[in-house]
Length: 110
Length: 117
Image (cartoon, rainbow over the protein chains, first blue to last red):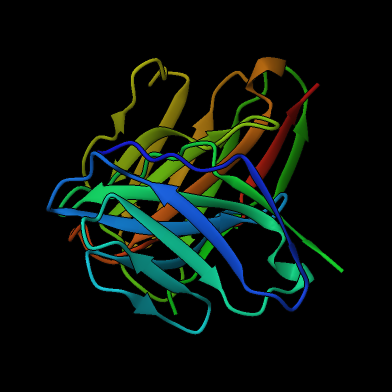
């Protein structure tokens, strides 16, 4: 699976949009981009995933660049409860393992 | 939907004890479940892949005789930490996927915090 690079930490003001970048420059055509988050002392929570089209659900939006070498997770109106470590993972279609990197520690400030 | 339940949430026991952790998919069938371990301030490390009705596949460096995995049904996998020692103290997390198709998300339990005295 391709490796991902994320900033180790980010801050965002409550109510603002939080934009979390992820670089996956070695991604191949059959790899999906997944985003999970982990709130302290809990298991990871699935957020969203995509292949090449932008995706949106009730939690977030995923913007994937046309060349698929990077993506951005957008939390449109961040709340204090969105403070967590966010993981960007790429996974080959048909494979099952998730390999977690260090993620981005997002802190939402009041 | 897609709820994964893990039990117990916390265990504190003496060195040398064996500890069993259960992972259940509550509203779906999971042919494959995964076990992770997470030390403080670190990321999740995959320990093993648990396949229903067959032997688990362990990641490199994980002792299969130390961490026994049983996946006897489509909704239950268990991890037994045998003869646990203080260095086994960690946060153990399981996950499950509804299908074997790689584009479906895995869903995680809330983890088990194991403390060995």
